[in-house]
Length: 386
Image: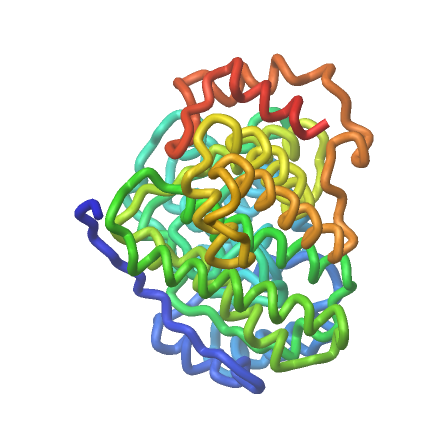
């Protein structure tokens, strides 16, 4: 186990009716000018828009909103919102929706107090002197951004992340009832995203991490069980509640403590979604199947451990490589049960941009920690995904 510091100040308000505490939460933060960012009219259908507008009116808060967020959030929209926020003297940003809305809000919270271009934080390594507070009403269990210290945005060519504890949301309202109206595809890519966050943390070279090993294994089992429950009954609110909480548990950095996760697979998917605009969760399904298949042949031991402990494979009559390859097959079967694609061919993606994607991703050196991917190996995993 490695030394660590753990910090996560996000206040969680979970359960049916949790949105009714919004006014009190905004009051606690001393908000005077609120910018709400979201994606589409669904928040009006769910009654969230009215809840936010009512809370702002009750507290005398100036209220500005923008519903233009798209998947794989763009720096262009962030720049527009930063300009709008400066003009309105916004002092708090509220995200409603999933990871794209939350990451957009975090980027805006970085950009409003900053005199330069907000892209500086993502591309040029700028550090903020001040960050506005962010709050979240989450409607899509997936990214876990509602309690994470990270934001990821794209400029159309690069999809890059920024991490800082000051962008951890001040509060996250999680009402699982909001997820009942999600299309099956959105639910399922969210589940794939959650699983990818758990696996990235699990694949670690650090020894003596029994506590977090077993915590991650338990979370993976809980996710598989409740995903199957939703396949049987999409309106199972108990299963949706479990998955909503798992989204946060998988990405609030608690499961990072004492270990160093891999994260190479996410760098691969970020290149794919930046290049082709694919949905992140489905992209992660494709990449995790390919990455585990490739790594099974070069460094199988942690993959083999997961295959035995979670999927019940026989550790006595199989080699580590065989067990690791079976893990890849289990993941493929699980993603297919969610009606997700598991190869680039199914997404109509060929090899024509592999070199430039590998070049971009490794411009500052190899990516990944469990296995270091230089340009050649990065491309090899992409080829395994065909």
